[in-house]
Length: 227
Ligand code: CA
Image 1 (cartoon, rainbow, N blue to C red):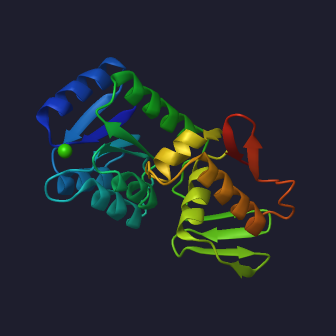
Image 2: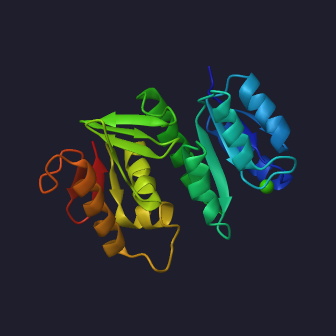
Image 3: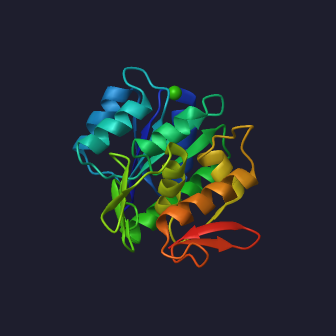
């Protein structure tokens, strides 16, 4: 049986192009042309994946994603964002999107993201992360609270965003460029050094032995990996 994908997008040209592309890959594609319809269908039917544009009539993709998660629906969501609206990506991930793609994108890139998401579903590593526990650390992303051995630890918003991204992509190497794009939104004031400093702070606050981290690993020459 084909995997079912719901495409929520209001631009007919994009709907047509993507539907053709995905059908050719063997997916069963359904489309919804506005936010409310997209939400109703994503919440009421069984889809393997939802591709959600941010700019939609009726209800934005961000609202659709938030309401979907609030209803306890954990269908994987791939958000489509515009390059000119950088904040949407981080907001989208915070609201429960599993990944995002910046428009315009090349078809192979979309297919690769979809495959990666579906692989993560298979591995059972995709449930939207609201709480997460590792070692003696407990993170409540919804409330923005972190506890280590039961004692509250204070993390800055950026540290929490970084930790969330690493945990969401746990088990794989995340490059500094990816973090600059996804967590810092290409902020011109941020550099590789910014990331390294934040990683050091996270380790200082959360690792038992910051010099010998057990969770936030450095992958030399590439980036970081959470495990
Ligand atoms: Ca749109």
